[in-house]
Length: 140
Image (cartoon, rainbow, N blue to C red; front, side, top):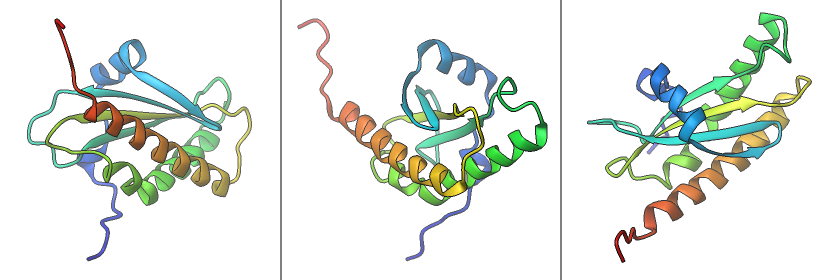
């Protein structure tokens, strides 16, 4: 069976309210040159366990062509490595909003971006799997 490496419309995070909530309530960690920010979101009939978006700051990259190139490279690295995250998530439990922010001051090679995307997705998958497996004890 072949892996589905497409990046479908349903996997894209487009909700401004979810993106805003991620900055206020979300959890994050850094995997240089990327910063991963995530938040569980309410979604019915989700066909994917995560929705993904990218941010490249205008403050560090003034030219749109530079920002767009980095966004394309990050999206491609995610598309090729998202299975590392998906195999740790159960879409019937929670759907996660995931944003990757490019934090380096200079544009790095694609291979470095992909290597750190790979590491970051493995780390995030482990964190989320551990969170899902923890029993919640309220009122004990």
